[in-house]
Amino acid sequence: MEIREGAAAVGDNVLDFSRLSLNTFGVDSISDERKRDTKQLYLNYNRLASLPSSVSLFCNLEFLDISNNGLSAICEGITRLPRLKTLIGKNNRLDESSLPKEFGSLQLEVLNFSGNRFEEIPLQCMKLLRLQSLSFGGNRLKSIPAEIENLTSLELLYLGGNFITAIPPEVANLPYLSYLVLCDNRIQSVPPQLTRLHSLRSLSLHNNLLTYLPREILCLVRLQELSLRGNPLVVRFVKEMTYDPPSLLELAARTTKSRNVPYSPCDLPSNLLRYLDLACKCPNPKCVGVYFDSCVRQIKFVDFCGKYRLPLMHYLCSPECTSPCSSNPQSDAESEDESSVPAYRLQRVLLG
Image 1 (cartoon, one colour):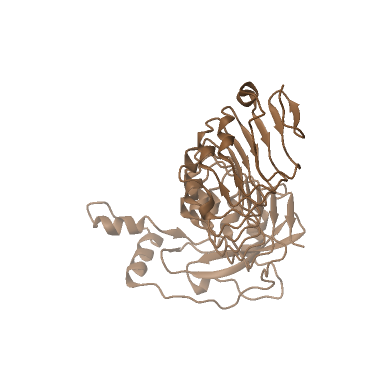
Image 2 (image 1 turned 90 degrees about the vertical axis):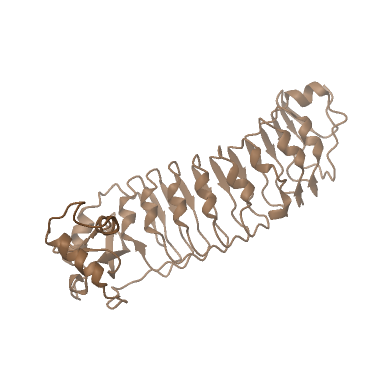
């Protein structure tokens, strides 16, 4: 077997060229049979400035590690690796211009570009429909593209250590997402749409700018770990928050719904029927009202595991529904919320 001096043949299908201070990657001394049989190739911890096109000669490659080099470009030849499932490219100098145009044609399942210079996630990555794990931690990202919803096989999304300010609601369209890591960013709120992440088990939001959580987070029935430390979470009830008076349309719709006024499709125009279908029931257990566009926001605290009180955002139908201020931190509405949360729901709530 012909192996370049210094490289290690760990197994019949594994070729290790890591930690050899390589400036280039020559394959002339590697037999065609060896190239064909190699499924794992390690080029990490070298001095490669670009991924050479010769990598395409490993036609059956499934795993490629090019981490910890000086890479600023990935060659087009990588798109000629039809069996490649895992690409690890951590700690390089890659940015949006580093990827070949047809990068999205790969059949990748795991992609790790953490520790690079990306200011946005390249749209080529949004075409990797088989992707199960995507990591862009420690880059310079300012946003998450709405196209993230295309990655419907995604199970892990790691975007910690960036400059992200908002979570797009499209993230909620990832049915298999189990681990969502958004720590060490600049996120100020969590969209209530995340309640649709029925597979979510771990949510890391520590070291952001959160002051509250949406009440809908209670619907994440499989959530086991929630990390919130390092956020300016509120420590008291918000007594006064902006309330926009409802329109005449909403007032009429509220009356129709709360008083059960009968109507049928032949009585109203289609746009009014659709509007009536948007009614949201007031979560106050003592109120039978509804709201549509205008509501009162209020912070409620929910006790998880008997140890941590988390501030959740409630949307109530009117100012009269807000709980009276009291020296007792637990109002009737709060107690009901707390009792509805099983003790096993969150095994770990990390606030400090």
